[in-house]
Structures are given as structure tokens and as C-alpha cells.
Length: 374
Image 1 (cartoon, rainbow, N blue to C red):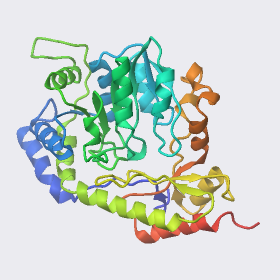
Image 2 (tube, rainbow, N blue to C red; image 1 turned 90 degrees about the vertical axis):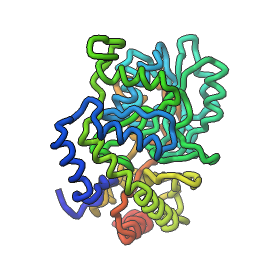
Image 3 (tube, rainbow, N blue to C red; image 1 turned 180 degrees about the horizontal axis):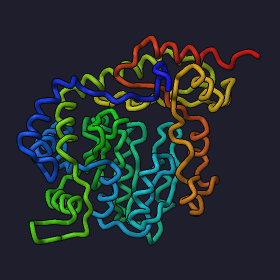
């Protein structure tokens, strides 16, 4: 593997000397997991930072999502998007639930709320939207529909760390539950990690039981739980990462704006327009290669690779095209025309805090140059 390659992301790591005191504390106390002191501190500090009522930390975002469905006792069918990472729908299968896909809005890449009502059946119990690329869903409209039909709403907010709505509310305040991912590829990472956000203390207690085998105390098992706990090492890294996250997000926003400026006016290239509310996170740099461009998306994708620029076709293929989902009636291509078109056009370009502006200009220059002459 060449050291000269530029990947779609690169994990941000704080200075090692900032982490070492926490590691020494772990060695001194010999508490590695099971709701240790760093876990408790990180949970409290994170809730304060995100301006939410309750947070339950997890070993990863997928376990948080699986547990969210358990905590709300979701059953039957769940309306969700085909345009997401595999974990979104896999969590449904792990809970013996049936995904029911609805199409996306091509301007936001989020589930189109105006298509939700016609997808509701007597078996529908919940809606599972995704804040795609950190772009907030239409949370008011989705909640309105959920209230009318008595549905739960669980937001997959894996991309949306630190994102606020246009009314200056944390995006994680919406829905019954929101899940976060702190995977190495995310804007905020704890190597591996995740969290569940809720507003109710009793729900927080139920979640804490579920992520720890169901133990309520030493001899009482209150629920069929799993081992989903975050360890002390990840919590330590999270505490250190909180010190840098505002600067990290501002740097990502600067790079996003530079890309947008550099790519403006290239025929057939469309940058996803993410509303620049007071707090947004520039989690990804999504670009759509439309028919007016002189190359297909795949031709551009592989040409960039030839120049050691590794973007990502994120999300391609659609979840609805995967073997475990493509037999569902809602997976038919004629049910998902926008998602299918966008999946064929999307390429996410490199964006991470250490990316030099010259590299952004180089990538944009390669795109601007178009297909090389024969």
C-alpha cells in the first residue's frame, strides 16, 4: 500500500501525551470496563457537550442500534431508508424485524417523509431514518406522522455528531431514541464506540440493563441483555477527543467550503448542499456525477484512484440490492427511483482535519480536467 494515497477519511488522534495520564489512571485503578470511573465521566461530559438529557455509551454504534430496537420493544415492520450503511437494516434483521424501504429526497439524501404514510401497514411499529452525511432529516414532519399513527422514531445519527437543527437544537434531541457511532471513520472517534441518546431516565435505566446482560443488580437479571458496554480505554480517548472536537469540526467545515468553491461551475458535478446552520459537522464531502459530466461516476472514481485519490461510492450498492433484502417488495427499483439514481452518481471525496488545502485543489483539478484524451 502506497503511503502517498489519499483516502476518503483519516482518523483524528489527539497528542499521545494527552492520553497517557488517563492510561496511567486505568493502570492504577485496574478497572478496565463495567461502568468504570472514566466511563461515568465520559458519559456525563458527552451529554453536557451534546446538550442532551441522557446518554448510554456502547462498544460500537451497531450494538447501540440493536439495543435501541430492543429498548422500545419494536415489532413487525420498520420503515427505513435503502440509502445507508449496512448496519442500519442489519440491526432490524438481528431483532427479527422486517425493513420496509421508502425512497429518498435527492436533494438531501434523507428518507422522503412524504412517502412514509403510504408505506405504513398494520404491522408497522417504528420509523428508522438516517441523518445522511450529517444532514438533518425533516424531524418535525417525521414526528408528526409518528404521532398520528402511534409509531416509534429511532434516528440513526451515526453521521450527525455535534449537529444542530436550524432552531439551534441538538439533532439528537429528536425522536424516541438516537444512536451515535464513534467508529474510527467518524468525525468523533473512540477507536470503536457508540451511544444511545434518550430524554427519559427510566428509558436510560432500561438501556443500561440491556447493554450489560440485563443485570439490574448482582443477582437480578431484568432483561435479555447483551454485552454492549464501552471499555475504559475508549472512554479515556473520548474524554481527550472532546477537548479538540470543536476545532476538528471547524477545520472540516473549512475544507468542505473549499471543495464547494473549487467544484462550482463544473458541468455535471453537483455538491450536496448541506445547510450551514450554526453547528454542522461536514462529516462527508458528497459529490454527484450527473449525466452532463463527460465521465460516468465509476470512470471518475477509478481515474482518481489512478492518481492515488481514494474516494468512496457511499452508498453503493443500495441496501435494497443486497441479497438479504432484495426479495422484499419494497426493494423493487420502481419503488426507489431516486435512491437508485443517486447510488449510481455518488462519490464521497477525501475530507479529514489533516487534509492540506493543496490536496483539495489537486483533487478538484483532476475532476475539472475530465476524461483524458485518447
